[in-house]
Length: 198
Image (cartoon, helix red, strand yellow):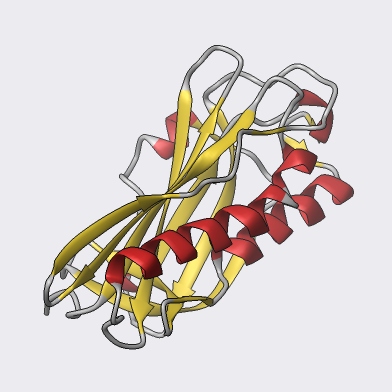
């Protein structure tokens, strides 16, 4: 199998107080080929960033930021790259961060069987007040679930729709995401090292 003719790869970029960078990669099917791919890429990048800007303050510390969203839109005519124009969005949680090896696990599911039908995101830079002994409290879990829902949302721009997808490196194709589950137990670097995530 192979990637479809029209799709999007989006990189959601976060930065921590230590100037380290965390990236969550999103994939989308495109409903067609936009007349103006550059304008479509710019609009979709901005729409993703604007939605996240309302949510990430609740899951980042005062010194951490949503930097922005970089979209690579691929059609039969080539790949077009755009970056959201949203300014740096700071967190609103007045706390220190947990060590960098801690992250919130968001699990993706599709209708495909086996490993190619599953994926995960690791949301970085967890404020220490949102978890106790490696377990998120209930309000924090709800806040992260909203972020996961924003990752699992249809976006539009340039006359086309972008529907959330999971990229499988096992067969180099995209599968429609059917559900996303945010877990309350934090993932650690030891667990995350077991496999690369998409």
